[in-house]
Amino acid sequence: MIRDEKTSPEARNPGSQPERARKKKEMPGGLWMRCKSCEKTVFKPDVERLLNVCPECNHHFLLNSAQRVQLILDAASFEEFDADLAPRDFLNFTDLKPYPERLKAAEEKTGMKDAATVGVGTLHGRTVVMGVLDFTFIGGSMGYVVGEKLSRAMDRAAELKVPLLIFTGSGGARMMEGVVSLMQMAKTCAALARFQKEGGVFISCLTDPSTGGVLASFASLGDVILAEPGAVIGFAGPRVIQNTIRQELPDGFQRSEFMLRHGFIDRIVHRSTLRDDIAKILDLLLGPMPGHHPPAAPKEERGEGKGSKKGPGTGRGKANGSKGSSAKGASKNSPGEKSSKKSGKPKSAPSVVRESPLEGQAKDGAGRVAEKDAGKTRSAGSSNPKQKVSQTPTSK
Image (cartoon, rainbow, N blue to C red; front, side, top):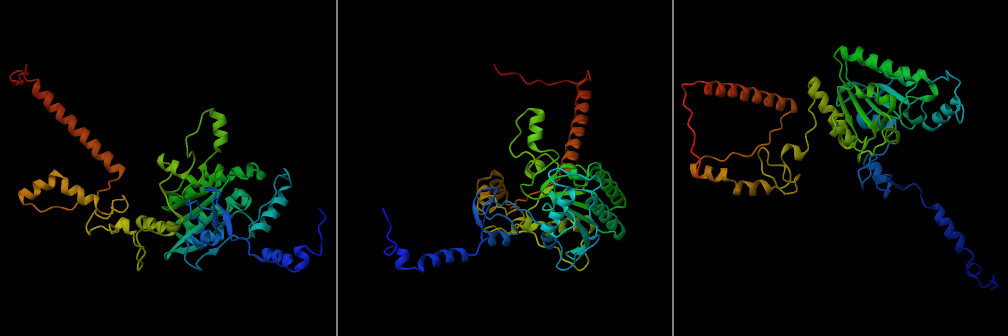
């Protein structure tokens, strides 16, 4: 069929099609993004408002070094040092492209000379030395400059006698620098040992991913090791491990939740509370800052959840999904309360006692010693020939 150009819609309304096309082109882009975890399309401003966290599945996206510093430290308090250190091509290394070309492309992309950013700032008024490994610069890999910057940061923290915070997001040692990059593992560990020998406090914060030689060196030597939810933490990748041991790996292998269950890290902290939680840990280890009031705990931790009564241990109803009624129902049906009513004794509010694992081990050990002594006493008493042992006759 031959189309008549005079009777076509474009001929009747010549400005309609270009206008539609122009409107589509003028639509602002970059408003939507796909989460790689839940694979849902989310509104990008919502993600940025939540500190680069997916509103659907709580997946933590990457943060660059500038965003990380802004998130953790007090406003306008960060002073970077050793920013002029630049990497060198010691080995004249070339893979798909020469190493200097990779460095130039990464610098143009990030505006940084290498993956590490170190400096001094304040956190809730407390002076700290902070280091960040930026994954956007060649995967946050540790070469000569990264190792040197982190070692100087550790020495600066020892000199100032202030805590040290390091946030790692790295794929490990930088292969383009060969053995020079591997030596940074030993150098950073030695500098960290000097810092900790003088009583310094080091908090290591593992972000996604924290792998390879970085995890195998300073990142796993923190006095306190924190991690963001869902972060990949491990030395070798799961595919390499699975092909080596010829076994199926468990679900969630090398994720921060898996590492917490197996005792490798101390706590998983959501990005929205990371700043305040680090401040609380420093207050516990070093004492609160004079004239500074630490941030209040969430309502659920203080026992002030919705629908709960005032008093110790009664504010956990909301967290357990019972809206504060489970403790009431349990107290009505408990036999201990009935006996207290008959005897006229006042009721005591239920309390939740959290004891540390070390205290529990000490109590268990004391209990075993007491049982052993009691057993010795019983055996000594039964060995006396003059003592009569009464036996209960068995019923036929």
